[in-house]
Image 1: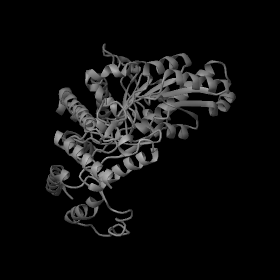
Image 2: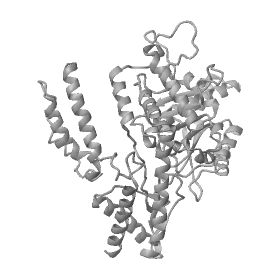
Image 3: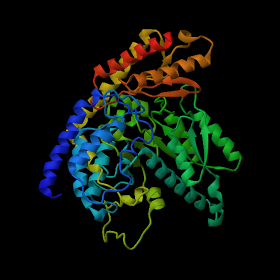
Image 4: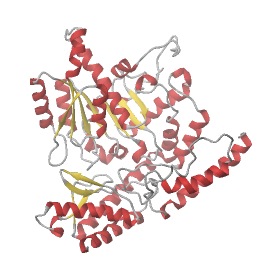
Length: 492
């Protein structure tokens, strides 16, 4: 394919993408194919001879499209949103054009420096403390800074490695020998709540530390008192606390942990405090939500995913550290084929030392496009629209009389269930069965898609409102389907 052919096919692909977005709401959001459907439709070996663009496009329409769950449908309310936007796509196109591997500053200075600048932009946009900025107000280089990871799970693992580095250095400072430090590593313990994302447990598994899962309170929040009790118990058993994750917007209910209280404990016990705000962090672009995040300025690290609720196509996870020393110290490996800039090194960041892989794409471009083409006002309007619709849905469900809200509606998530009294007052299993069946009935209906969850053994539904192109009409359709399917389930 030469440049002229690329121009022709590129325009056709842009038309195909635009047509898809204009029509995606007309098809069921959830795929209904059976496992293994594609294996019989696709040859078992790559083609020996080149195939035409037309053949590939036809296969996308006839073979790939039926197996797609349409996350970009305005009627997709599952999990959390996975936002996309045309400005982000244009940024991704530019990223593909350059096709760099930006592991070192020298690989492409613009890629590294744009990421540094854009992450400072984003940090200021969500109100992060100045200690997380790469460039100080006086123009000099700061100790902290931001870096784009692939996902919040990667960010969690990276900061747990940095936290381990900090803890082991502290043991050495306290006079422990290298041999004893090696023996002590298996005694390191990380603290998570029973509502912390599974990435926390995965991170602990990867770095080989112990993990203490703390039961959250009745409101699904991790509290200062519960953390203190867990640490006291572990220290009496000879373990070494080193890390705690507080969540700003949990996956099940968008609960917000007691960040200020947890920060108190982290400071007194010398723990690394990480804030996982993967979904709800985007709401901090709106000043009215920032009082909910008091205490995050005291954390060692903070992370949220612009690809969830801030119009930036996957993958793009924003991680900030207040001091990069331990992160870079833990992840730096020098080789002769990884040259460093000679002379002055101010503002020279080798982001390979801030992440797990060596290679990295020019992801800052799409974030740059989004922030410039929407502006702060456009991003805030995007967030506020969804919160307003979630509040409306909550109100309608309560007024219906058959439903109860299971957790406060703060952002775009509404967690609810059919009331016990509507089904059987004292039959827990019957109520759970009804709500589980309601999830199935709604998704089988095909007009909308959502997922259910369990809150301490209680089945509930959790539609998440956040589509880039969704309107109040889509939320009204969701309500209509919920009501109709509830009537059918209760009458069955």
